[in-house]
Image (cartoon, rainbow over all chains, first blue to last red; front, side):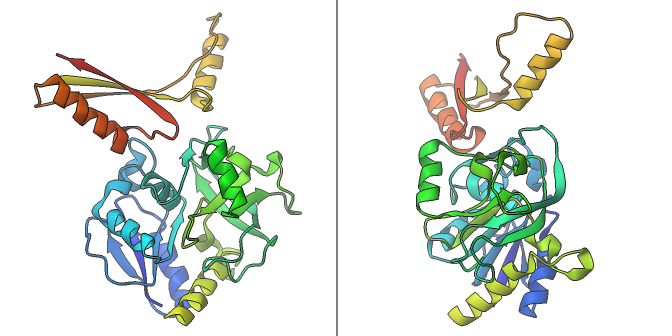
Length: 232
Length: 80
């Protein structure tokens, strides 16, 4: 599997993703600079976390206009899997690949801690190594993770089973108390219509190695490698 | 020509910053605030002198980048 990680000025999780992909795929992804529109042919594109362009204007808004993101949109529309994590999720909503927007956390504080997530859609290339209703624990680290969309969009996401992860209690119950940032319907990650684009606020790459205290993020990368190896 | 753009959160979109500011003002003894909403102000100095063309361009800028119309409204004032 050949993967590319998009690097913008201010990305800071690009190398964590690189390490996680190397561990699962056995080979290094291409680290692709944002200003270079000439993206090589790859099986997977990851838009990593960080503070692209210093979060100026709105989180992800400026990166969404960079030359490579136009190409990422074109590839996604052709079916290439695109994973956006944290700032990557913000960029994917700003460029229109995913609906809605990530607003300032309801509590106005930057949140950096492990959260429990319930897997809601295990039928994608990103989540095939998880099972539906599985509870996983991985970290969030964000100031704008408060997912917002109008009711019509939220209903559509639910009806089409496009919510991939929801914030939940350790026992798996989706409750307001388990919602770290005020996100509508406890949404932590969503899919596009074609289910080849996933945006999520939590960071699977940060808990993909036992040395770091947990491996609940690893199945995402293992699953991608398995799914995309058979596809190729 | 100058374009002055006010970007505000749409009605119904929660504005925790505005709420916090409202509470802080209350704490300072300023009463009678029914609501506080926080937005953005952007000023552009344009080479264009035709107000119709300028408005069209700034409108496109707002749609494409300056505002996120999922949650924000914008208002354009041209200094002619």
